[in-house]
Amino acid sequence: MSGKVVLYYVNGRGRMESARWLLAAAGVEFEEVFLTKREQYDKLQNDGALMFQQLPLVEIDGMQLVQTKAILNYIAGKYNLYGKDLKERALIDMYAEGTLDLMDLIIMSIFTPPENKEKYFSDIEQKAKERFLPVYEKGLANSDFLVGNQLSRADVHLLEATLMLQEIFPTILSTFPKIQAFQGRMKALPRINKFLQPGSARKPPIDEAYLKTVKEVFSHLFK
Ligand code: GSN
Image (tube, rainbow, N blue to C red; front, side, top):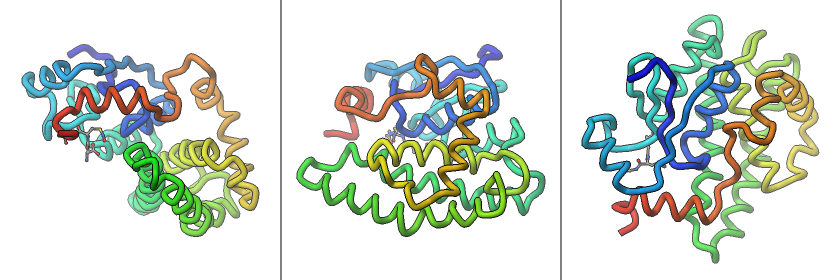
């Protein structure tokens, strides 16, 4: 294993995108191995790289990290995106887990049959407006950051999630001025700004090609 940070996943957002965001926010260079064939997944398993036979996998600091949340926790802890004490960390975890729940709804939409998609998306929109966005609007009422007085993973996940929401519901933030202002501040941060430019490691919204690759690599899940 080299000293480089290497991400193993398919070439799409899925469960790896938030790790890409955190690494970008921390200014960490990383490489990516994109799985396109079942054999690559089998090889990682045969090599003992996948503790639970699952991706994502991140090689970092001599470890083979799996489990999305363990990966995000490690990156956040290492790069000072995890608050100043245990209480801040707990609050960051609450925001982070909620925001990952919201993003999961969008990520899983690819597996919803076409005839159910309209209802599925209208439920996401309602939940976003009534359950999730009011929480962030309140959290940002008196501060530039969700937790404490510095950038944390809670903020990075929130930017990622709100941009995802706007891809589907372009006007969804119209009644959330604090989140809009937050987005403006976050996008102006040089590392984030760089990640938002074309050619960065940021991945586009999931599409049919992505679904096809997922079905090839994880063929056992689609029998
Ligand atoms: O969050 C995590 O990393 C785990 N709790 C779940 C990871 C997971 O389900 N990975 C999928 C592919 S990525 N998509 O969601 C996976 O590797 N599935 C193969 C299997 O046999 O479960």
